[in-house]
Image (cartoon, rainbow, N blue to C red; front, side, top):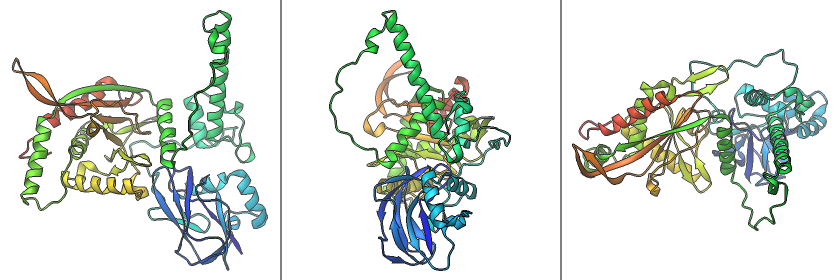
Length: 455
């Protein structure tokens, strides 16, 4: 009996995966629990394990190929188990169901997987930590279920995007099963409308002689080498584009006296070097800021929130993402419940997460559930960072380098240590005053740190 092995869905936010390496080749037998292949998402690398004994008889997706979740990547010969099509409710035999589902992109399987919230799809499972990548932190408001009375058949993501851009779904050609409109259809429709509008403007201004050069070729494009996105880089590009499309950004900056911050870190390092703490972990400036920001978020809850169709979702948990640069691109592992952890606990966790991020060993739960993000480029000599909000969060804090600068104290100009903090905020959630209160509280805590007390 034949069984489909598919690209599993690790939570609600995963839409595709890349087959990095086949561990079991065509014609090779395997046992239950054996690793079948390695896959890569935008955030993590994971191993897909067998759910039972069998033998690979067909490899449908080659190494390095990226496919939507639910796509059949291989077929296996198994004994006494239902085929994938039978598990999915198919009625016309494994062969017909297999071909039809491949032609449809397996969107029906995607919806089933999303409803079940598990990566154990049709004969394969993702291990470890399956099903948690897209887990959202709990909040005070939940998104309303989609209406059952709508005439146009469309996915929830397509409906949401259409509402955000005032698109009539009846005018969007659907490419999903049975003509269902999916998110990609809405994006293609928007791109087509923008292109048509640009052509109209160019023709109109050209007739008036205002911008006539726009209607003419601008010459041969310069030559270059095409470098494909990594899986992480491609998704980063998509998410930052989505962030600017959907979140109305605004920015506020404050210069912060960093003398107390550096004094606290020096005190911690001195105690550690004398063996007084018994700790080998040395908290960084960023670790201290994670703890400081967690305190400020507890007092300014709307900075720990996101925008939804019905209003603002204010999160109950304070889960702070820390941007980490890797060879594959930028990833954001999350320190969960940062407000409940000590500085040393945060330091241990960020060190472990950063190490696993650079080695490509992050688990799904390591990157799930963030409610706020910190991005620090101070170590690269950057003075000011206006970061892009990590959707669906409402804000991100950009951290610059600590610099020695002349400051005025008591009417006299003296040498001071300052760093610039810049808050990027979603104006649907925060206005200028509430953003300023949050950032002002961060500044106040940093400047009042006591080396003898800690954070």
